[in-house]
Image (cartoon, rainbow, N blue to C red):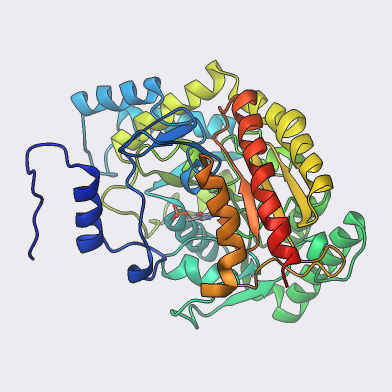
Length: 457
Ligand code: PLP
């Protein structure tokens, strides 16, 4: 392979970082010739910057994972301390940081979820949760929602019900698709939250009947749907799913990879509705992605299935000491700094009211919704028809209206999370009120571009 680094022992300048990236880094989810990834030189708190020092307020938390902000000194110190003491030991051993992290996560989890199976990220957690559910029930099918994202490994991508369709389809056998609640674009023609809730539950129940409950291992859902639009379930929905699972001996799996660890202002999003799933998958916010980490929280009942029968799963690096040390520090930071309460405050008092005000002033805003530090602004061409500002999977000229809005944010130093026809407002949970207001003011200006784009046809 040609073209090694030109400065083998020094820091590379921005042009060199970019050149080597374009020559040798194969980027995820991208047509390689169409991208120009921005080199990031550093970050702190809710901000990151490029090599020239141009700063961006991060309203994306990268991939909605930097929940405690960048370079928190306590996490940096914990990682350094662990690195100096013990860098690697296989999952077959007990290790101090791993034991502490598992105990701390289990203590904060609902009820009988007392064991943690560590993974390297979210998709792997979903793979293993499904495997546990299948072995526990002796059944195979998994019910997974349209408008969901569960990860990009073979099983998780097959479970994902995202309007982006994958080249790897038809995926895995035994995935049964259902509609979850989403009143703004109701699959059930509902007009109220309560109607949406009742109809979504009836639909799920009907599917269980026709599929045959005795064939269904698990119902998988995102407690609050993330990538597909920050869809907060109506009150009663998660409890209703819990009831269906109880009635038919189905394992309830809550995927909290994105919604957990502070994003919704609680340790786990299900805490809002006091619902106890059998398995919870987590990753991202558990340690803000400082070192790759994810896991499955397991109920006592399901854990007991594997008391005298080996669980077939695990990777070389599962529960890596560096990752676990950073999770311990992160959970301590959450409590020392009152981050859960701050996340709730940001949602209730700053982001929610701020976005509702923007919705009144901008004709392109169809709906704003969310909770905690987990919000979406859904952009439309027409508020009556609710036609999205761009079509599903838009590329090229079709995607131009959203690209213009995103560009307007970036020009002004705000890094948004844009997906399809939505801007997700998902800054770190530690962002200050002033910083959030600053970001919302920029968004306000960028939405003028959205209004123009919506009207220009
Ligand atoms: N599950 C949910 C709900 C997610 O949002 C994601 C990632 O965005 C995943 C699973 C996959 O996690 P990872 O990218 O760490 O594999």
